[in-house]
Amino acid sequence: MKKHIYIYSPSSAIRDKAAFKRGLKCLAALGYEVEVDEAALSTHQRFAGDDETRLAAIHRAASSGADVALISRGGYGLTRILPLIDYSAVAKAIAGGTQFVGFSDFTAFQMALLAKTGAVTWAGPSLAEDFGAQAGADDIMEACFDDLVTGQGEGSGWRMPKDATNSIAGSIDETGAKAMNGASHINDSVLWGGNLAMLASLVGTPYLPVIHGGILFIEDVGEHPYRIERMLAQLLQAGILAQQKAIIFGQFSNYKLVPHDKGYKLASVVAWLKTQVSAQVFTGFPFGHVATKVLLPVGLPVTLAVEGRDAFLLWGHRH
Image (cartoon, rainbow, N blue to C red; front, side):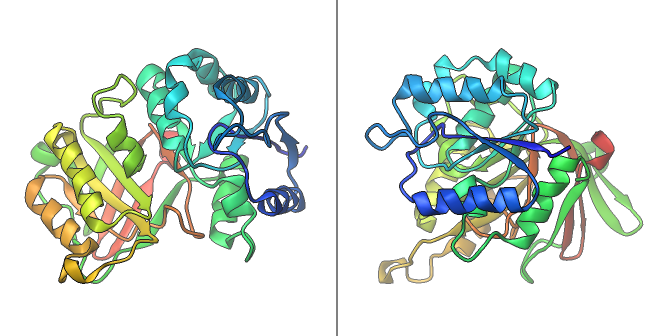
């Protein structure tokens, strides 16, 4: 039986109709049964329909019975309807087997759902930007998505840059890290995070989950390093970063340094952060507004294993 993918638009309006159509064609070619929400191509100002339309689309996705509810695109729009979402209905759908997948603006929905219900969602692709990419969908992204749909996914690995942290420091009493066969582990820590701007925007609201001893992953697009640092400073000064065991930098793409920076770059932000937190900081993770992105279980306890420059997030043992 073909796996059922439900496409809906909870955020910005679809402007690139060609990418939308390419995404649908790609999913069909991969052997999925694709259902498109009735309001997926709606528009209202910059949004995919007014608030009521997008809210109804979320609830239709929850009642669709699909294997995966996949956003058409990110952008902006979920933050303004967070108080209106029926989180219990979404959590019930997830318990029944529907996996909610997306990234970017979708981070707001993921954090709110986690805060309200503890339900696990997946940070992953969107229809238009990823499956509908002009150059074709990325092979690694496709494989990770297939692993999710078929229930085969067990984790994700990456090789960090040469100047990255080599190991998880500290004793088991201080960090929960455990050395095993030359590798270091942080065990059973909740994986959470996503788009940094969305996370920062939720500070002080009831829609940001309180995670102690977690593994926080972050990414963003079009944000200059000083703005990235400013958002991290907000999370730091709110006491959030002090509660984490590890912070993982995904991809921060599409920004431009200027002469005024005089050597201040993203690596400068990472170096500054390492002086501010006791959590281990890792870089180079393949997730963000880039073609090659893995899928991540947001809200699930995972193991982070690091040996030299090789790092792994493992969750297969949790299924």
